[in-house]
Length: 382
Image (cartoon, rainbow, N blue to C red; front, top):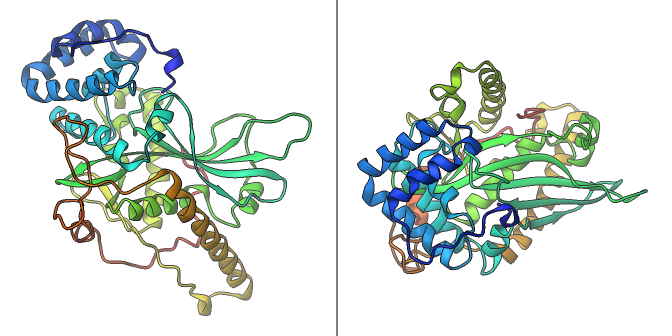
C-alpha cells in the first residue's frame, strides 16, 4: 500500500460504522463493483454484525491515529469485499481481518510495519545469486491495492548484473498470504501463488533451472513458507482452488474469470499434490511444516542422483542463510492485549497455554511424511 497515492483525510474521532455507506458509494467503481451492490452489502453487514463492524472500525482508527494506516475508508470496506476464502461468512471475514492486523505488528520487529505501510519492501533474506546475476532476494511487501488473496506478498526476485543500465528485479514467484484463525487456531494461510507476469523482464526455463539449481520457483517459495510457519509456530494452510474468490457468484459467469480459475485450479492442484497436502472439509489444504530431506538415491540413476544432491545442497545453503537473516526482521509474538484494543496478539507467552502453543499447532498438523520436494514441480503458476 503506497501512502503517496492515498488521500490525506484524517479522522481524529472514530467514525460511525454507518460512514461505510457513503464510502461504499464513493469507492465502488475503483473496487470493480456497482455502487448499489456495495452499498447494500455494507448496510446489511452493519445491520447484522454491528458489534463486529464497530470493533473493526476501532482497530483501523487506532492504526490510523498512530500513522500506520493512511486510507481508513478503503480499509474499512474490506469487511464486505472478497478476502482469501470464498466461503467464509461476513462475521468470519471481519474476524480474519482483525486477526491479521493484530498479528502483523507482533510478528515483525519494531519499525518494520511502518516501513511496510509506507510502501517500502522489506528484504527478508539475500541468497547467493547465480552467475550473471547481481542479487537474489526474498522480499516481503504489501499488495499495491487490496488483494483478495492475502495481505502480504513474499517475492522471490533476481536482478541481473549491471551492463548498460540498472534493470528492475525480475519476480520469479510471488506468494500472497495472511494470518488468521481457522478453527480457533492461528494459521499462516496461502491464498495465492503466481509466476512471472512481466512481458519483458522474464527468465527462460533454462535460466530459472540454472538459477535455482533445478528447483521450481513455486516449490521453492512454499518451502520458504514452511520455514516461516515454523518460525512463527503456526499451522500452514493453502487455499484449494474450489474456494478461490473467482469461483464465487457471479464472478464464475464471466468467461475471463472462468479461464483464469481453470489455470489456477491446474497449478494449485499440482502444487498441493506435490506437498501431499490433504483437502479439508472447509476448503483448505493442510501443508506439512517439514518436508523430508532424505534422498532416495538407491532408486535413481547416477545422473538423477547428482541432480538430486545438487538440489538438496542448494536448499540447505539457502535455508541456513534465510534462518540467519529472518531474525533481523521477524519475531515470534506473545499472546497479550495488543495496543489497548479489543484484540489479542497471536501467540502464547512463556508458560501460557493457548491456540498457538506448540502442542496445539502440532496437533493441527498431519504426521510428518515424505515429500517429493526435491523433484520437479509446476513450471508456471498463474
